[in-house]
Length: 324
Ligand SMILES: Cc1ncc(COP(=O)(O)O)c(C=O)c1O
Image 1 (cartoon, rainbow, N blue to C red):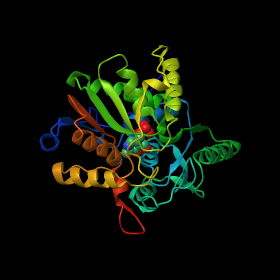
Image 2: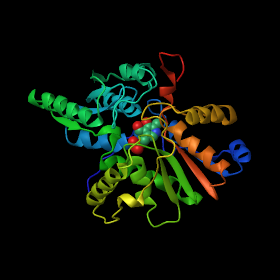
Image 3: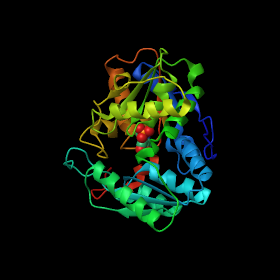
Image 4: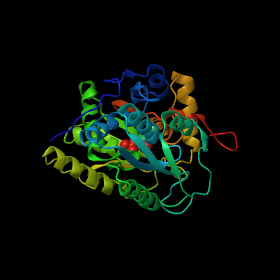
């Protein structure tokens, strides 16, 4: 397997106990700080991009085309990684991609936040009307083909960096925490490479890997299983994870993807005021709301790790109503 790596992030990220939160919640709670990667505002995508950009450079890629929500954390980090590597980054975006029809409430806002940083990092953004995720993927393909028809060597990176290289990065990241002996690792899950990588590395071990859904899509574990099969193929292994092997908790999504939830906002405020740690309203706050809820129900036995996947710049997106 050839898996070239382009260094971007400071590893290992810190992993530490949350003393005040543990005392108040009555649990043994630790945190893995992928919000502190030291790269482009932090977040779980930096790890994935080391391998995705490594591949792009090895293949002599001139243009990377991807897609996502307007306030995507992945696109912000992709833009920065591409600037560092001298590759042109293009992203097709929608303010609110959806799966089952438009959500009834507004999302986190379209100005500032990640969008401001995308401009700083030099991302070429192609914004289209709100529509389904599948429509977004089709538009991404159209834009990529256009660049190819102009003679450019193009790499397509799926939403969230969830190609096998992204999952590989998280299988590797798992080794940074194995020695702590956690009973459960809990984190925000969406395009899947974070969950696939961690589940892959801990397959057959007593450590439970729990992704908290940020999209209201119960069928996402089928995509996770496909990604795990791609990882198996790339590594020449046969871990053979199936959709049913993924613990994907849909209980904390709220009204939809990109729509902050009341419990998520409460969790965000609580952690900020208890530990001085910032979360984001779309992903990590919803995941942390699961921790608070399960702690209150006495459903968090043992030593628990919250894997902070970043996203903090989204906190600074301007919402038309003034609240996120
Ligand atoms: C802050 C944050 N947390 C979690 C996730 C989900 O990670 P994954 O796409 O690997 O499932 C994302 C994805 O965009 C994210 O930006």
